[in-house]
Image (cartoon, rainbow, N blue to C red; front, side, top):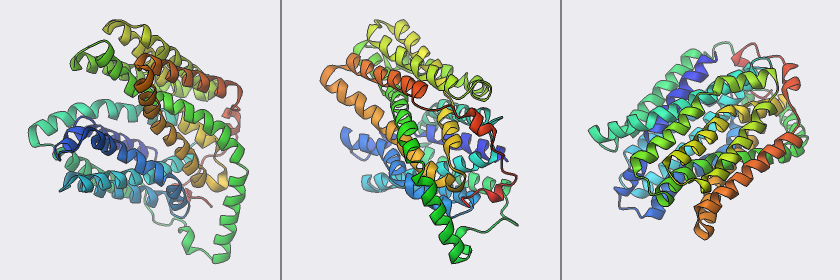
Length: 406
């Protein structure tokens, strides 16, 4: 059944990568200003952020398979709408809607994996998902650029939509619905009321956990996305490297990133979650702190490689930690909040990088992001409990038909 998660995940990751080199140019073709292009680029993330909590409620009331199908269908329609957009406003709205589809897909997929795994294999399962997603992001941009160059800027969007619809069919075939327990709205009103009350009680008991572990996650996710913005900007604006060299540096960093997903899973399952999480953010903090000291492409490449190895060790760690912490009778609701906090960190990273760089320069921005990484490492080391033993005590679900909040 996990193949039904891995294959769709890598397909969607590759398709998302198709748009990395083409979306800015596509938005520019409508006559958009630089500020509006930035808004278009951020729109999907904003849509995901807005939809994370509603996605948790949606998944709580559906079979998880049906929620995955719903999210992927919304994504496919929105991406096709973006590719066929007659104007900039249409494109912007389509990107927001695609973010909502991704939110439903992410929460439902995460819910499935929470119930289908436990401590003995959860780290490896989640890190493999993280590694495959990274692989898709590495392979997609080159394919997207070639496709747009040969068939036009709208072609990557159309291909994305077609693959997403094929993924819907794959999910329906791989996770059949026959004989499964019906969705929550089909149950007796009293039972539904008791379930909602149980979820509220469970979530009330998780507030401190969300504030503590979620706060550490927010810092860590900000470091991850800050790195994506800062390294290419520092290479181009401070070191004066051309775009080809910048691309090689970024690719080398992401290659290092992808190479460690399986060791990351082994570390999490055999030693503990924090044995992967803490070194990850510590290495990224050191790499960030080294960036202002670099004076050429070689030095920046070494710093970027260090950050790549650091991030690679953390492949799947936030997925795993969220799965460990989620209360059994409110999995999807908890994961909606967990992903909201993480997505807020993803949005905050580039904003912090840009704000500090505007006032103090990219070198200072790198130090600030590095400080966030150090803060995340310390917080996880001393503030967040180890969850491996708790996860090992949990039985995995026997049937994906049972994968919904009870």
